[in-house]
Image (cartoon, rainbow, N blue to C red; front, side, top):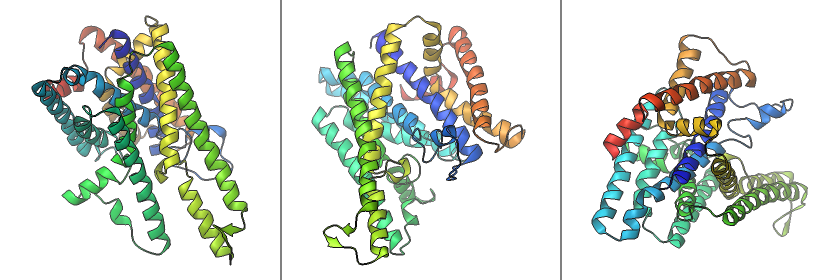
Length: 379
């Protein structure tokens, strides 16, 4: 792996984690508000329905896919079965550690991505040797299954059936699998699609300038087209006077038809529709292309170096942001549910300390404490 590629991954991880911290702090402090008088900032940073919701986390997952490719490239290209087997077990060990750590972190930080992050690494151990077309197919299937589960949930809820079993508490092996693959915050269906895009993207590194422009343009096209399809499709559904090709017989029919289109054309993250998945892939592509270009253009600038150091300690910083929130909010009661401004101030304060400590730690101690445990166990 070249220094430029590593630096781009580290900086992208750090930027993505900045966004994750802001949205997490806002979500835990203030929740989601559907009020019509919300400010632009409140709508933008809405942790459950806003345009930035889960996009930072998805970029984080895509970067994990890139990292999987860079980590396993040598063994994959060599064709050595023993080397490939070792790479698989390394990913499985790392994934199992994150999966287990995330399981326990869930007690103090509900909805943590680490639990799913570990599961994605274990699945990635099975994918990295596949050809691009098969990896793309796996990603597409995961997106389709995610959308299918959302449709199944809507239809059964509409007809009065209980679908709470789709998102159970982790009280049994069955429930653990359901939550891992289809339930809660970051299930493998459809989040595996973001990992697959990252694995494929990793095989294109290092980017030439022209390729980066094409990928960025592709990302912009995907993002814009999904929002356009959602907006104009819903407008047509709401204004239409037919359901399919038959006349509407009642307002109830029209309401059901409109609700169905809202499920199919949704770009909201927790609806997990196809437009959400495709649009989020687009935004993640844009983010990585822009950040990697800036990183390569200014490799020695102090913001780049500080973010790179933070990106090398994202596991430690992620755990620290959960602990810091609980200490400040729940134990010391120094902050409360007073709006977006409180969440932004709390996030900024955390990152000032995190970046300073990250730079100091990197200079004198090297690898972060949790990263050291992670590498010792996972290889």
